[in-house]
Image (cartoon, rainbow over all chains, first blue to last red; front, side):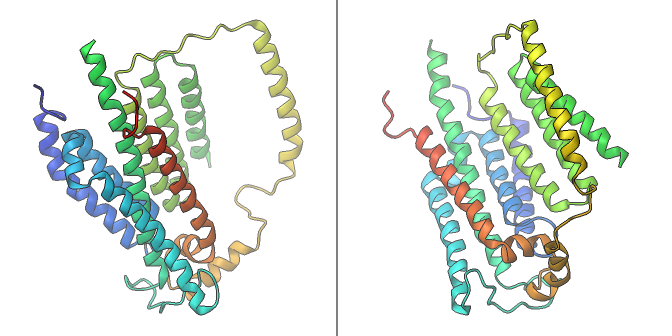
Length: 150
Length: 172
């Protein structure tokens, strides 16, 4: 019985790097209104950190941390949050109006709803792309087993 | 601007290799080279936002494509080419170039925008939104409605992939 995933070296290095990749994604998202980047790029980086886990440790180990139901829930939550921010603008009279206080430029807590939009898009993109990858990887597993039996 | 053209020529070579080569994995890698060339182009044109997004999406798509193609026995039969194909291809390409030469001469020069909206955004974005990153302030504040549409497209595509590839309910 072969162990799931790749060799010991890959697993060891993955344990070190995966949290750094995750942290970098969070940085890109939270600083999206100050430095280049934003919700989309940060979401893809976070999805990549989970894909890194799937490739190194196999599908089961990664899904133990974040299962498919949770991924669907997080993606829907991101979409609803973005809609909520859009409807929040209606309080000021216009769809998508930036009604929160703007704060001082170049500071982390600035630019009103843009930070919240970044977080919503990050949840949506990260969970959505990871769901697509799980679907593609899960599709392949039974097919490989069948080929092996033949 | 010479470096832009060098990268562009490399990208075209990569695209031709990707379509012409017989091995599927080599084709995917050539496609990845085209994408990373595009990242370099965005960096040379000083668009770091686009460069970051293009880079991470390219890595993701190359991983997914390699995961999908590696170990598969799928191979494309080499297409039989005839002389008539080349004649028709040359005719259509020639006609396209002849018309596009006249059309492209009418466009404004590279890097000189014709729309006045951009200048307005650059002047007022920092004061109106409080965001130092003007790209962010445009896509999430001034043009947030477009971003909502993009988010809907992504949501729909995820639903489509999950519905097509689902394991539950599949006949064994």
